[in-house]
Amino acid sequence: RGDLYVTFRVAPSPRFERKGDDLSVIETINVFEAMLGTTREVETAYGKKIKLNIPAGTQPGDRLRVKNHGVETDKRRGDLYVEVRVEVPQGLSDAQKEALREARRDTGL
Image 1 (cartoon, helix red, strand yellow):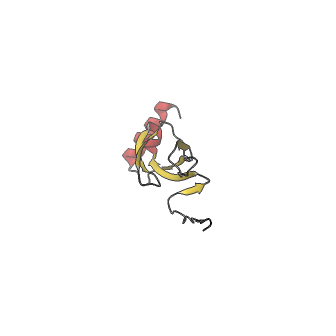
Image 2 (cartoon, one colour):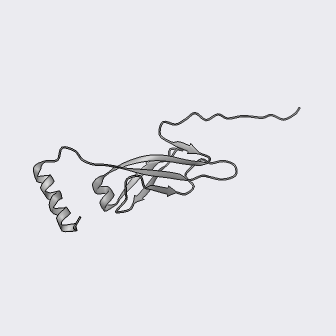
């Protein structure tokens, strides 16, 4: 007779960072995806794959919120925040560099 109390300890995840019921994850995209926009399949902490629309003009460090895909408790469900990292290509050929210079001139940047 009496009450039974159960305590859960959750091990840290190498992929997700937890703050309260919200989770954060980093997703790396290339510079062209950042400029033009893209759709990525992102796996949640529960193993569900969701489609994430990354809008054109996304900047490095931007955080995209995916509602109700964080930690689920008996009272609520947190959100998943996806931080975008942009990977810049290295080792471009002379022709690729010239094409990028031309695109830069065309856009006035």
